Length: 106
Image 1 (cartoon, rainbow, N blue to C red):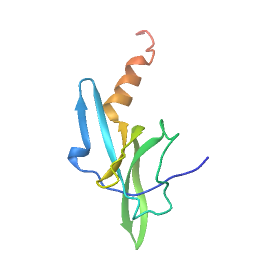
Image 2: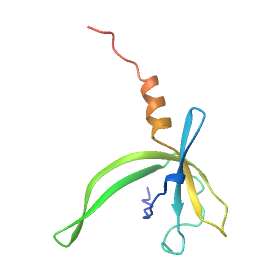
Image 3: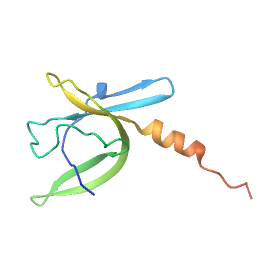
């Protein structure tokens, strides 16, 4: 198992809806993170995590985190802003919840 981690920031236009699906385009910057691979083959199904980081008493601490996406595609626009695309919150949690068997009311 390998942990691939990079930091980035999202813009509102990185999140979009198309019919019943919503998507997140997670930017990747290969220049800022040379340890990251250039190709993410085999990463479909990997998590996209939102992590809230704060600086407290001179140290960075994780304040909160959540799984916000599941990857399925990598852009090939080497001259532009590269990204990993994933299904976003509504697609993964909304669909999963509808498939979850609910117990009968008591």
